Image 1 (cartoon, each protein chain N blue to C red):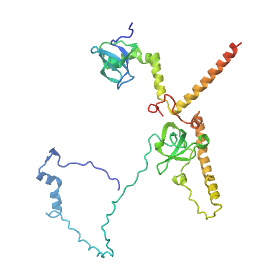
Image 2 (tube, each protein chain N blue to C red):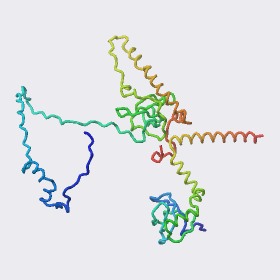
Image 3 (cartoon, rainbow over the protein chains, first blue to last red):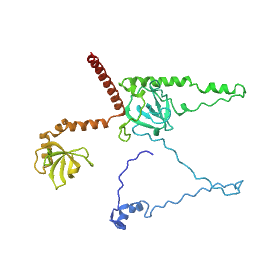
Image 4 (tube, rainbow over the protein chains, first blue to last red):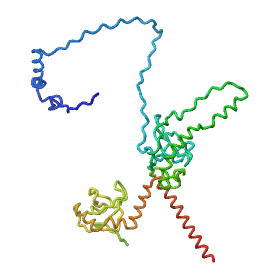
Length: 233
Length: 133
């Protein structure tokens, strides 16, 4: 819809008290200009007759009547909203991962993927965390930010992390188990290269800040006397 | 036996309640337990003495001065600088700074402490070596 100028809604007949208007019926008739509309139409209020309705196309009787009355499920028009990102998490924020293989690791946030998960990288050379997806709920965001302007993560999406479709193997009895073991453990070279390109620019901006590299390499842990609800992250 | 008295012009620190940590001036005494208290950035109100910790600083005012006179008297007595240079005031500032440290700041602090400890131990080792002769 084209944006139209919104005129302030003027009330022609303001309430004196609830239920009692300021102007009488005859005054309101004059104010609304109904006399002018009538005059324009030759003394009669204009009538708009209904357009003759087109005859509805003849419906064919259905071929098949189901035996039982089956209820149709209610229509669901719900569109799930993208996960709301916490205000404290912006591209370049250092996050602390709280669960999983990399718990305690301090990691750089790159972007939020369409699935709602956060794309994160160690960088790999610094703390061993590769390009990885992490759920917002398992993360503490610190107020430390890294300059992420040189990093291009446009190409990486949820599909990057999808499981590779397994090729159908022909049934060979003797070779069955050996063939399986060989294929599963290798990371494709393109993923390694992708990691390197993303990290190259990142590591440069990390080394620009003193101590940040050692900081990211170290794990976070609660020590004696640290009260999480009083800590400022 | 007592050095800090409740008097008009005594500067006190609020130690309980909404204005915790603020410096206020006792501007009048209401009864045995309460004082009328005022500060440049708050509305004058009554407080129980139990909520106040008296400081060494006093300012020269008459009973219940106007806000402008109060502020002028505080400037004249230089309350802010006296407080910030006193050992009590400095401790509070350090506490606040420590509480507001970032995770990265805490990490850098740890590195600095380790470094300092290392240097101290080096010097100590040198001294020990000298004295063992």
